[in-house]
Image (cartoon, rainbow, N blue to C red; front, side, top):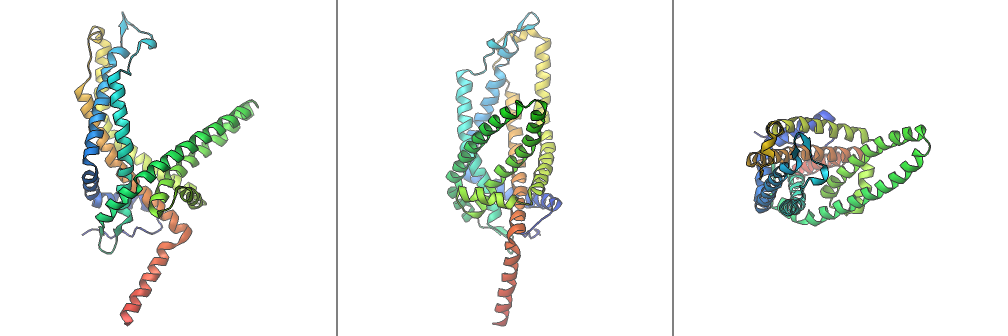
Length: 324
């Protein structure tokens, strides 16, 4: 029997991590199935373009590892960006732009329309949600990208002024940059969740995210840090085969320079292993999105108490129905 998850409630860091794993274990199959049904052609194009991206990239090793005797050629002779590589990279970028907003909105929509009472999700609502949020998420990404550029320019100007002050200025740059960078990462990440869960416009989402992080920044930082470490460690397991194979391949090429001058058209095995690792990373990202969705509801509950009020209203309606 599935555990009934009360989505709209405040959680501690360990509860968010624990519930994220439990929810993932119970619903990952349904979420993955829904993602595939909604995006099968996009996923096929994404994985195919990623396969050829890796294939062409490592196919350029003959240009990167050219030897003149035992000396490397100058870096000016390295030619990675061939027309074929550029074309595949363009397709990979296009499919990623299309898939990632749909991927994110499918997972968050599944959580948004999950009902604890019947332990189920309204799939039709999720499908409509994905269609509704697609362009909004792309627009939000563009807005955040422009904000990042603006903040970068401002930081560059302030950093230049402080660096003129010598060592004291350099210390101030480090002291200010690290907390600001941490806050920016948390803020820009949580904006996406506020935007999709509350059905509001981008400007309102930016404002509400700032309010939700008030007094809860370090809590949010702790959740993201813990989940990033966990996801990173698990991800290393899936990245290990391709990393080991590439390392062995590089050592073999370095020890046999005569083979490097020959045409090296790419390695199908590296490309295949990379695609498998990429799919595994996407599945792990589902777990990460679930955890941050629970973080969003924890932040909202902390500031608004909406979940508690819903419980009170539900109890009141149950008593009214019982009296009638």
